[in-house]
Length: 297
Ligand SMILES: Nc1ncnc2c1ncn2[C@@H]1O[C@H](COP(=O)(O)OP(=O)(O)OP(=O)(O)O)[C@@H](O)[C@H]1O
Ligand SMILES: N[C@@H](CCO)C(=O)O
Image (cartoon, rainbow, N blue to C red):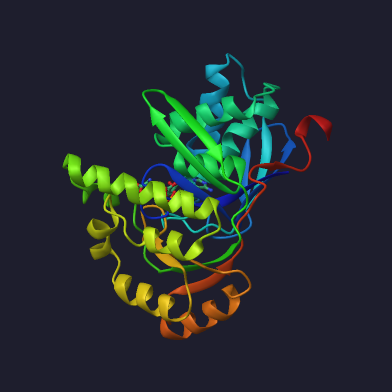
């Protein structure tokens, strides 16, 4: 079985760079078969008529082609807890799962670095795929074709997510961002990001939360796409959240809250936001997990 977590990218000022793996999962049970087929146990996974149109198959096929290998047919039973196009890295989880599928079927023995390189090549930016693959809080940068990355020591907070019922495609949420940024604004924006990461590393979650909410790169442009943006931030702060930001490209928002307070804050926020799914989630530290390799079945 292949299991990959959801992820929340950006964390405010860490735009296109920071990401955290969160405890909701896409799982694939793969068995060898006469021909290819994909089934799913819930409605979060898009239905396609032809297996060749399935996103996870396309990713696996691409990786197999890059390695001059052909994929032997399988039955893939999928289950997903990750809503589509909501800012929780559903595409990254599908990509990482597809890469692992090819890794096993073609016996590629890919390293973590190689899996990340393929994932970045397919997704285009490294923040979601790195967190999904490695688990935990990961900081990345892509310069040219190469992504560098570092996983932070475990962050000691709970998470609360606010998931609205509508979808927002990453592509559309990127269209509202400006093409250019003044040098002085870029210097301040990267200073905010640096301080957020330093505060997280030293366990100063109050300061980290303040910096999360001081982003200059994308939050103010995307806030207008999320109807309850300011209300969610201020209510969460009153209830003790350190910081609340847009998760990935949105429309989900995510709060970093004191350890042990997640469930209580989620319950109170749910009462204020009846049209949202509000949930306390844990950080996932494990990333991609392979419970049984298909070659050992
Ligand atoms: N399990 C899956 N199986 C097949 N396709 C998927 C799966 N998960 C995601 N996708 C594809 O990815 C698209 C969503 O990608 P998109 O980048 O817009 O949002 P996201 O990854 O959920 O959010 P974000 O990147 O902001 O965190 C879906 O519309 C679907 O085409
Ligand atoms: N860094 C990406 C994450 C969403 O895929 C963005 O904000 O557009």
